[in-house]
Image (cartoon, rainbow, N blue to C red; front, side, top):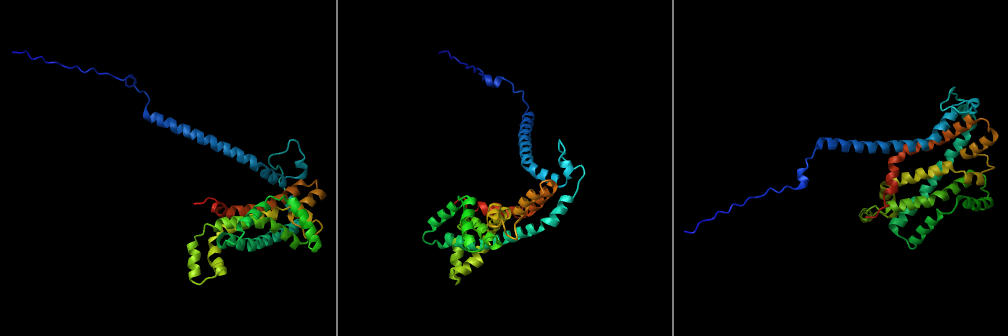
Length: 308
């Protein structure tokens, strides 16, 4: 007989060196450390944002602080960070002396907004949906008009208004402010109205609506965000304009608040609390409008900026 040989194969347990090292880190501890690092980074970003915001808002705080501080306290060295003896003398001076300037600025700003929307909305609709010949060239010219310095435009308007006897008048200043806002308004409204589906306009035409009826009943309601955006920026430009006001309305009987502050500094350069109180009240309408209309601004500016 042939002997049967039984071969026994022994398997050697080969262990990877990486698995021989015991992992002594607790998973819960690792997750807690990761969360702590994320909270630390978020905290650093928050502190950095708060610091930068504080730096940007410090002039506003100092304006309010100075408007409530007595004149003699403003001359102290070092100045007080808080009004030690608060007073409303500056605001009383504003009410008695600067209210006419504020009323004039409000009139100019509202009239400029109305005229700008009246001109920019139909122009934007025409460029976006009616597509006339030369629309590309016109859009380029509107964009180029934004690059012209305001002082150059003011010099040209001075000669124009002087010849038409509109120098030192509110209509002349409103017309000049409108020319600054209309190109911006047309470009924003054109970009927004491009996003309105053509099917809506086609359905209106099928129902018998003409271009004017379509514009009034469909395009304008859908363009509310863009209209609010254009109106707000136009109001801010007209409200804070100084170049056109100082050039075209220097000798007028009704002047805006920017000239009021300018004259006030020249005539009462020792009453700094009254000057800063005037600046605080002049910035109040713009601040309120920005707070109330901020949700419309983001939509009005970004819609149409990215093509699908």
